[in-house]
Length: 130
Image (cartoon, rainbow, N blue to C red; front, side, top):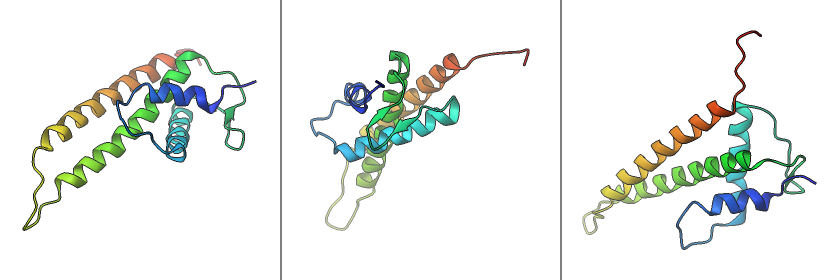
């Protein structure tokens, strides 16, 4: 029995401090993006969409990495939302005070990108003799 979607889902949900429960389809899309990013960097994961599980049992390091990548996609989406809100300026309305949220979210996203890249480097097998 392989690792289920719920195990990675729980790891992802331990990261954002949102009071709003995200739609499961959106979270599943975050997982597809995370799997694609992981497969691009390292190796095939063999996720079965219809069964919502992986064919193999994933270790905690891999589950944590997938959760972090999913969170990166979530933060990217939230940053896009904040950027759109800060660009709403009209004759009668202007949103101010969102600059801090935008800046801190960009910093968090940059730091998360570095953490993910560092983990990818640690997961790669180095061989100088191939």
